Amino acid sequence: MTERDPRDPGPRRAKRIAHFDLDSFFVAVERLRDPSLIGKPVLVGHPGGRGVVSTASYEARVFGCHSAQPMAVALRLCPQAIVVPPSQGVYGEYSAKFHAILNETSPVVESVGLDEAYVDLTGIGDAEGGAHAAATDVRRRVREELGLPVSACIAGSKTTAKVGSDRAKPDGLLEVPVGGDAEFLAPLRIRDLPLVGPKFGEALAKLGVRTIGDAARLDPRWLARQYGKAGEALADRAKGIDPSIVVAGGRTHRQISRENTFGEDVTDLDELRRVIRRHSDRVGSDLRRQGKRARTVSLKVRWPDFTTLARSSTLDRPVQATADIASAALELLDEVFRTEGQHPVRLVGVAVTNLVDDEMQLALDDLDRRAGSPRVLRVEELDRTIDALRQRFGDGSVTRGL
Image (cartoon, rainbow, N blue to C red; front, side, top):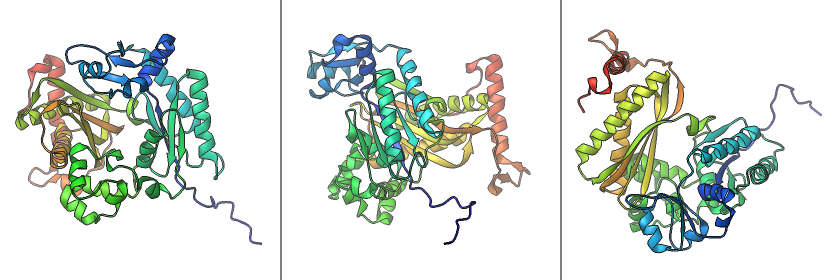
């Protein structure tokens, strides 16, 4: 019998990624604060005007209520619902404790909001049931220590784990077998994929694509020609292929963003682009002040009917220049309008994530031979000059040609 080389790490473990999601988080916290709300339809949010629902309890969802819905609409659907104003600060305290439990379970936790996170459970415990045991323990601790329900899914990719955690609700745990991501996704609605919004879904439905399995059978090259990067991503995600890794730190503590809700819905594309450039300007300034660069630029848009879409682009190298952030965000806007159709816009936001320290490797095409100096450095030096002038004389002292 041949002895194994002690330097050999052995067989490579199959990827096991979990997505944890606190169920109706704001409502669950409010019920801890006021147990009389248990079992009743509850809407967390501000009533009146342009107030929206932050979270709807499952009892309210039966009537068609949901998050990001105008509060006035929700109350028409469920007039007996109890409206509770958000408890600012309290949710953050519970969120911090939730994420602390996750970080005690795995060293690789990517927060994607107050109430949800991806956790890399690869190599945790034994090869057969270690991931499941870890997820079970997380759910037990969150229930016992915080009094909150949490749903989770373990799968081979972030996309499948996210889709699965939605199907595990309320307060459930689902595990997709190793190698079974594509089979699990195949019968589900195409709209269950996070990247498929309403218009993209409608366009695919006209082609007879109603399930994720239908999309998996389409020619990837045709999808790329028709829908660009969104089509390329769909071709992979529909097969359960998602190369993105769980990034320790994640967006909760490693995101810089700007967004605003318009007083009136915007239909002028030029105005929308100007606002995106202004957001990019502020985000870039914050990056430079913190001494950070960003690998990922994200765009968020909301239609008048409260349909909310998010798109992101991971760049070849981390950026901090305003022009680079704006360019990526505007490309994402074009992609949204190409796949979902052009709509009036109620809200638009720009964010950067996957932040790294301010160090950069220059590429050959950065060199402007006419000037004899790296173009990217000159652009960033201009940004810093503008930042310094604004800091000294006020934000309105220098404006960019947008």
